Amino acid sequence: MSTFEHIIVESKGAVGVITLNRPKMLNALSFGVFREIAAAVDDLEADDKIGCILLAGGEKAFAAGADIKEMQPKTFIHMFSSDFTTIGADRVANCRKPTIAAVSGYALGGGCELAMMCDIIIAADTAKFGQPEITLGTIPGIGGTQRLTRAVGKSKAMDLCLTGRMMDASEAERSGLVSRVVPADRLMGEALGMAEKNRLDVAPRGRDGEERDQSRVRNPTVRRTQRRTRPVSFDLRPGGSLGRDGSVHREAQAGE
Image (cartoon, rainbow, N blue to C red; front, side):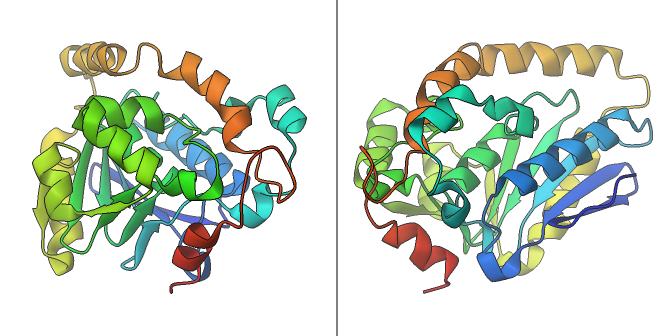
């Protein structure tokens, strides 16, 4: 299996666990993080001993958003001409094995979008979800405008995207974004138990076909829309056509 700088990958029985590991940055999602997640999913998907993939973060943050320092210098033309999928940003969504996100603390911006790429989200009672890109003068760029609407409905999705507010775990469960809420100290145990029940067998003909069919139902237009929103969402230059000071993301990533 590959070695990684920003994530930890391990197997627990038939469950492959990918843990984001940038605690000082509250697991901010850089291009390198996305590449490593994609590589880990490739390894786990190819491993016949693994039947389900669990994606987790830290106690304080699942992922507090994109790595603003990395993305801020990039121009609209740079993002428009680059292929964001080559860094594996949507690899989790295209995984052929069941995927579960175990969310504790902040899941904001790209972190919320990453969790929504998974088939199931289980949340600690400390979890906070949101798409605060509007506070940067931009929009969600890796599927948030589509997946959030499908999960919670148009009105609440518009509320979250246009105000940038966060919703707690209880509201997320009521809205249909997460499947269940558990005490923070039981999150990984509950998530691993769920993953074991949802795992595919070594020869997963029926369940594998069902998983692919459900994925098609969930994501028929997400990729096309991401191609349109991606360049706009990452134009974060202070003097550019979009973007302000990024204070909300920075405060979360600074732990304030």
